[in-house]
Image 1 (cartoon, rainbow, N blue to C red):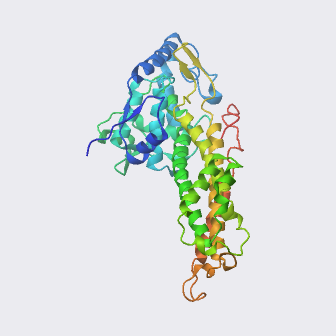
Image 2: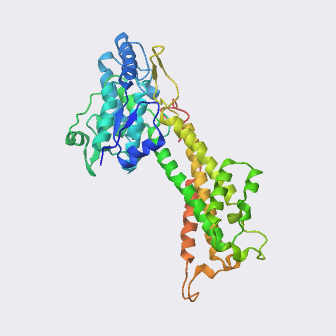
Length: 423
């Protein structure tokens, strides 16, 4: 079998499908032509700032509430090392390997954009770790969403300097041993490089992309299962008619209705109840295009946010070779992603909710005209799908809790210097 072509990292063109290949299928990665030149340009500006001892945040100052403290030129490299070590303070369960691999690819991609001021070897090491299967061990809790995902990315960065822990072939080991096992050497951080590895939205984006991809599949599956439920329920096909959708032209609604029509067009059941006494079906059947369609439209919004974030520069300060400036700004703030992920959570909770209602209706002989709980044989002696509904109800209830928005909360941190975060 031929070796697959590598996914090219250039800071400009990374696609969600490519990120999924890297994260879930171990696709090889390579830096695109032109990256070295872009990276070198911004690095020269950082080195000029160091040589001239111009005060610039994170290059020769403290961090957060300590940003007014000037750092001696002799301590600039130590500043970056201390930054990574001190910020690796995450906790709770370890992130899955696919999420960490996505984070690594995204961080390499944003650094390759050429606005972070790192040396090329920093990006190269990230790429080589991906290609050789070194997966940093990263705790899942600790990010506020601003300044990006500091704690998780710091744990990732530890491995690049030979610290922290990583997995190779599923085996956990110290970071230096993980690198050595695959023939790699740790880097020594120079000016700004610790912050450049840690300050950004890469965990949020990684989780967002992987969740979006799974949600997109579930939307397709939901149209299929809804159609099968309508058929088994002996429900009307008329709510899915083209003319119904045309007079309320939401794009997602039209897609879901079309999917249902195609699934139902060769039904062997429909003719048997074409003239039944039912006037109209319950909402969970009749309103499938409207609910599933709204979820599809939500996913469209989420996809647009994620596609922009894939190739965004989310460091602070940003280094602009065009003007020679280092600009402190707020591109690290996770609000766009926080809103999108909250919206996605709400949408998927609703997808589960309407599905649970159809399960209930199919189990209820008053509505379905089928045996209670779809039992075969003696009802009562057999419970049929009674507990299937219990499980569905349990999950729907939990989803309501999980879908509560996180972005409406904000806790000031860093002595109130970082006074609004996206969570």
